[in-house]
Amino acid sequence: MYPSPQPEAAPHATPDEFRAALSQLASGVSLVTVHDPEDGEDGEDVGMTATSFLSVSLEPPLVLISVREDSRMDEVLSRTDTWAVSLLGEGHKALGSRFAMKGRLSDRLLFADTPHHRGPRSGAPLIDGALATVECRTEQRIPAGDHTLLLGRVLEATVPDPAGRPLLYFRGGYRTLG
Image (cartoon, rainbow, N blue to C red; front, side, top):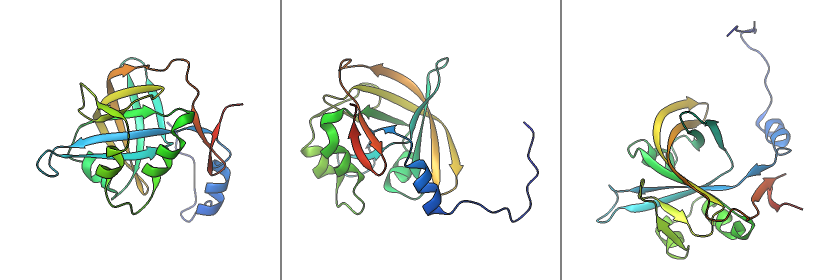
């Protein structure tokens, strides 16, 4: 890798410019979930809507998620090494919005109203009716600006709805194909 010469105080895009440019990229919507065994008597489930989920490698099977630094999800994933991702279909718009809300009181209430089952490898909630689900074990945590990137080895992958249509995020809102 060859570093490019950059002046010390190189100009960079403002957050608004960056947000506007990246809003032109359509992304699939997923729900990242983890079971936190240390929270309460039976533990607690934590969920986060994410559009920053991607495939990294087939051999070994690796994926990457991005979580906001110092968020509840980042804190739980710093001490729990297994987690799951459910790829949401077009019928999951309300679910995606609910888990994206800032300042919500409890994920416990959100999961109580959400049809789900436990992943056999992670113990994390998997959303019923998801297009696909993956259960992962963290291989590496990478600090990246105001986020943490988690590289996860896929322990199990299923496709419960192979004919389903994806929920997309584009230009600041949820969209569907066609």
